[in-house]
Structure formats: C-alpha cells, structure tokens
Image (cartoon, rainbow, N blue to C red; front, top):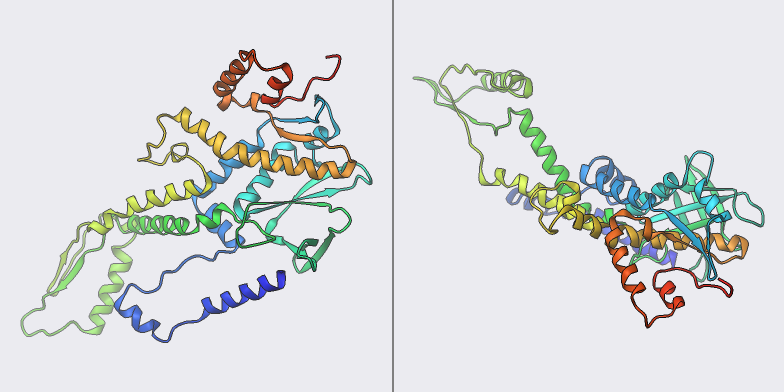
Length: 391
C-alpha cells in the first residue's frame, strides 16, 4: 500500500513540476501563474502558524482550551479520585505538566494532522514518562498487510526505529484523511489557500505603508522646445532620485522638485485597491472556519454569525474543543490500558467547564426530574459509572 502511495505521489510531483512551453506566451496576456506556498508540514507551519496571526491564534486558542480541560478517569464500576494514569498525566515528564504535554499534542494535530506520544520506561507497567514527538520528523513503516510495523524518527540524518509489532511505545493519533492510510489531514492544509491570500494582502498593505500610505503617481515628461525623448542617463538619474529621496516611510510627505519638462500627477485609489481589505477579512474568516473557531472570538470584523460572545464561546467548546479532546484522551486511555491490562476511560470533565455550565445545569435538572428513570439510568445519562451493590 505504501509503495503504491509513494509511486502515486511521485507521479503527481513530476506532473506539477512540468512547465508548459507556452507558459511564457500565456503569461504575457494574463496575470501569470499563481504562486502558492509549499504544502508540506514545515512550510505550512512557517507560513500559516509562525507567519500568520489568524492561524497562530486559532491553533493556540484550540490547543490551550483543550489542554486546560479537567480530566476524569473511570472504569465501568467507579470513578477514581486517584489512579496511576491520573498521576502519569499530571506529570508526564520532568519538563512538562499535563497542560504543556496536551497542548503540544493538540497543536501537532492541528498543524500536521498527526500526533505522536512516546512512552519511556516502565517495564511491564505504566510508562515512567510521556513525550510528544514532532510529526514532521516521524514516518510510518507499513508491513505487507498495510498495518504499521514500525515508526521511524529522523533528526539530522540519524534515524531511530520504534518497533510496533510487540506492543508499540508510540501512540499515533491522527485526523481523518480520505486519501491516505497512514497520515492525517490537518486543518492547516485546508486553510492553506486562505493563508496565502491573507499573507499576500498583509504584504501589500505593508508595501503601501512604505510608500506613504498611497499608491504611486505618474511622472509625465512634456519636454521643452526642440527637445526629444528623455535620454537614458536622465531616466536613470530620475529613477535613482525617486528611490532614494521619495520612497519609503522616512520620506513620507517630502516635497518633490521637478525640472526639465517633468510633471507629477498623483493617482487615487482604484476600486481594486479598496477591495484588498475586504479580501483580507474574507481570508481571515476562511482560516477561522477551517479550524472551527468562531471569527467573533478572533476579533474579525464584520462577522455576526452568533448573537453574542457567550454563544460563540459555547459553540466553540461544543463543536471544536470537546470533540478533539474527547477523541485524543480516549486514544491515550486505550493505549495506556495496554500497558497494564486494566481498562480505564479518560475523558474531559464536562461539569468543570465554565463555558458549558448553563447547559450542564439544565441537563442535571432534566435528568433529576425524570421520575420514570432509575438511578442507574440517570447516572448513565450524566456519564457517571453505575452504582455498585452496597452504595
């Protein structure tokens, strides 16, 4: 399976790398080819996270909110106040606590579509430490049947191989990808086009500010009596003076002295210039949409999808944060249960999420007032373990 994917990807890369012989001719009559940023994980992280404020804030908002959710550990019989799994998650390694570890894991999922957790030590019991590995350095090694048999971690040309045939020390959490069997699809990939548009609009705005916050005008050469066209030396000197004395923020408002039949005619904003800000705001909304963050929470102007901030905040937790946190913590609990043989469930404690307090209060009131339900059924509806014999 992996060989086929590799060959298919290789074919696609070759097709994309070809250039048409008529490309230059077409570029004369049109605006040329669109220049998109690379779509690999490292490039997307650099342009969409480190180089874009909307992408950065979207990832940080989701990762920090999901990592801050209180966790509960329970089995089919009881909910544990203290448990080795809870202790391990509280201090997964010497340099990180639970929030730092989970924030890194969620951020990796959002940026690359994959998250890798390494178990260190422990022998036959729970691991002594948990570490997050960078997804751009990890590769899946599939076996003959298509299932992973190993994971390879590459740093500076050196590889470390994690065997996955006898119980894996790697927990691989990935987003759904419809066209890949081993790697996940990240929201950053879906937002890549909007990120390019937003970054390009920001660069255009910066260039506009560097030119005194107005588009350039036109210098018209009228010439004097008996004078022909401007000579090359005159043209070069004029361009040099314009660049050194009249362009850039430090030269804003500086008067211009023209001579020799030259006339300056300023240009106003065209309709296309005025549309740049609207294009930038539309791209920002698309980036937020790809990550599932209400634009209102990011301070994007012109968005009135939700009636108020509180409603947007509640929708953000209900539709984005909780599904992500529930899926990841369930995968971690299943993986950690394999080390001890004790099946436990790890999930967010919804009763301690302030954004959902109104919904939880209403749910508790409805369940408590349902006289036709038994105590066991009520506890099951609230996500609590069943009551044992003497309780």
